[in-house]
Structures are given as C-alpha cells and as structure tokens.
Image (cartoon, rainbow, N blue to C red; front, top):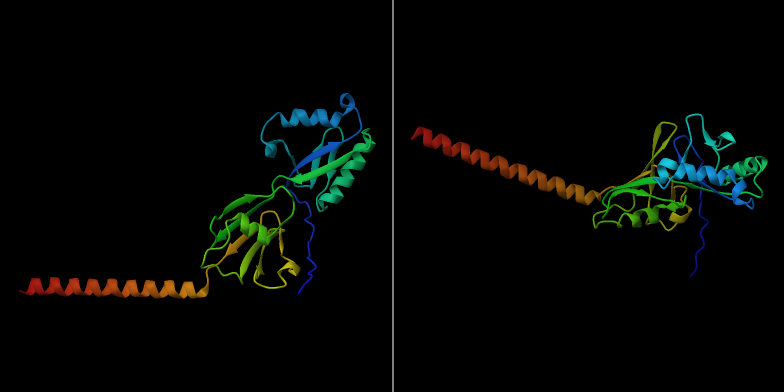
Amino acid sequence: MELDYQTKYVEYRLKSEDILQIKVFTTTVAEFNWFAQAQVQLEGGGDPLLSGFTIDDQGNIELPVIGNVKINGLTINEAQKKISSLLQQGGLESPKVVIKILSFQYTVLGEINNPGVFNNYTGKINILEALAQAGDFTDFADRKNIKIVRYENNIARVLYVNVLDRDILSNPYFYIQPNDHVIVDPLKAVNGRTSQQNIAISVSLLASIASIALLVDRLLNE
C-alpha cells in the first residue's frame, strides 16, 4: 500500500531582528569585488552572529556601497533576487546571492529527553526533525497535542499538532519557524496519577501530624 501526501510548506518571510549571512558569488575578479572585500573586513574571524547583517526596525539591511535595502516581508528567495539585482547595478558581474538565517532558533520543552534551545541553518525544518534534535519523546509524552507557540506581530499564537495523525505531513504547522516554542505536555493519565500521589502524600502527612499531636497531648495530661 502506498500513500502520497502533499506537504504544506509556507515560506518564512523575513522580519526585523533576523540576522542573515549573505554570500555573493560573482565572475568579477577579486581585486574589483568590493562586496567580498567588505565582507572580509566585517567578519574578521569573529562570531558570525556578530558579523551578520541584521534587519533593523524599518525592515532594512545595510549593504556595503549600496546602502539600505528593504527586505522585510520578503522570502529568502525574493531577498536573494532583489540583492542580486542591486549588486549587478553596482558593478558586479552575474552575482549569485545565497542567504541563510543565522538567528533561526527554536525551543523544545516538556516531555522530551533533551529539552533546550536549538539552531537551524538550513532555513527549513519540520516538527519531526525538531523533536528528533531534542532527543525524542519521553514515555509520558502526549504525542497528540503538541503545542507550538508562535509570535507574530507581538501576538503569541498557540498552534496544535498531532504527530500520530496519518495526515501530519499535510498539517499547515508541520514546518516550524524561527523563534517557535515547541511544548510537549505529559499525558493526562500521568497528571492524574501525580495528583493522586500528591493527595496520598498529603493525607499521610496530615495523619502523621495528628498522631504526633495526640501523643504530645497525652504526655502533657499524664
């Protein structure tokens, strides 16, 4: 039996505070490749996050010689084409632009073996890959109600994904986005058992306190 599913990948659109690595390949000889020379000065062998291009509050990045370029709201492919066109106008021959999001981070928390903050440099990662990076589920994980907290325009949206669903590949939230928080809750049965254990402990503790109080009272009255 063979089943085919159409994945619903929604391309990420760049926004303010994204940090980008921009590499340019051109047939222009090195001595006249002003972009490459500026990149060497920017990088200086340091942290790529510090030497990357940050999209400012107005949605711009500042490129050498060209100046501010507005790329907020563009997909990576659209931004590459726009910058390539501007570089060509600036004198570079047949420039090919490759952009990666250096600040693509996501967080996985809850009933997972290795929770934490993770980086992704491919620009495309799905929920299954993200969970695998975090060490996969614990035995008590609720696989049917995985929450994705996504921040859009200063609003936190809570999205739900069932990874046991046979149509998971067609889920519009199958692919995660930068700064997503993936939360794996425990099964309700685990929560119920924990509550029962807490109640039992509380009852036992109260019984012990009552016994001690009776003993003290008896000793005082003898």
